[in-house]
Length: 92
Image 1 (cartoon, rainbow, N blue to C red):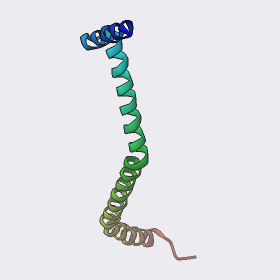
Image 2 (cartoon, helix red, strand yellow):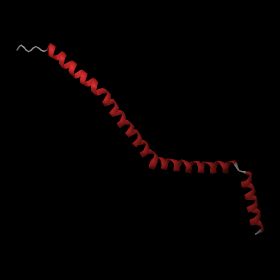
Image 3 (tube, one colour):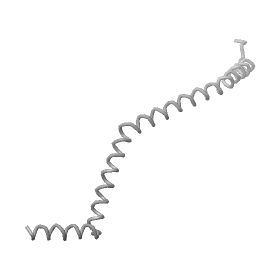
Image 4 (cartoon, helix red, strand yellow):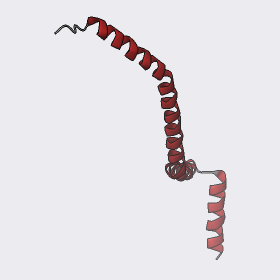
């Protein structure tokens, strides 16, 4: 029993002093578990919300472009029809 107490106290002392290899291992485990949590959270919640936001923005931008282009297309249609009418020979 005395030997077990001695081993426990020496192990406690060793851990309190800090072992670089142990700290690195614990740090890596902590980092990998945090990274796993963040990636899982991103794939479950973040990515769908991000995709939805991007899609809504694209739809709004498409609507704005269509609204801006509509008068220009009408102008092009009338001008090209007038030009075509001038150059078409109707004397068959």
